[in-house]
Picture 1 (cartoon, rainbow, N blue to C red):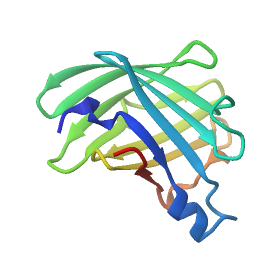
Picture 2: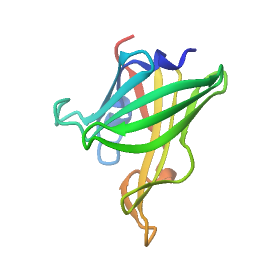
Picture 3: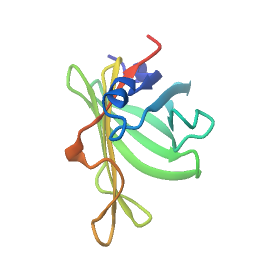
Picture 4: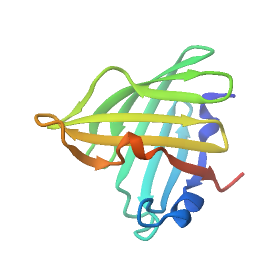
Amino acid sequence: MLFNEVVGHYRNRNQAFSNPSQWPQIDIRITEPEYGRLHVKSWYKYKGEDDPYNHIEYQWAKMDENIVYTKTTNLITNTPSCPFIWNWDGVWWNGNTDGECIQGDTRMDSRIRFDGLRYRAIDTGYDLKTGDFRWGKPPEEGEFLFERLDK
C-alpha cells in the first residue's frame, strides 16, 4: 500500500456511540494538496470542520519501500511540529515521533497507524516538569478507532 493512500475522511462513530462519555465523536479529513504533502485536519463532530482542534501538514519523503519520513507543521499556529517516521509492516503504516517530542512545556506521545480503511491513533500530552497528564487520552485507555467514510 502506498503511503498517500490514507487520503480520505475518517470518523470514530462506532467507538463514540459505544461509550460517549469516554470517546468524543471526532472526524479526520486527510487531503493531498500536492504529491509529497498531506494535510490532516481533526475536529469534534459537534463543532464542525470549520473549527478544527488540530490541522497538521506532513511533508513526506520515502526513505525506502517500507519507511517514510515526514516533517510536520501545525497549520493552525504555523509552527513546526515533531517529525514522524512511518514503517510499513505489511498491513499497517505505523507512525511514531522521531525521538522525544517537546512542544512548549508539553511532552507529546503520539502513535498513529493506518491501513487504507482504518486509522488508529493515540495522542497524549504530559506536563514537561511534573509528568502529569495534560490532554488527549492516556495510552492505557486505548486507541481512537477511526473508520474511513468515503471508500
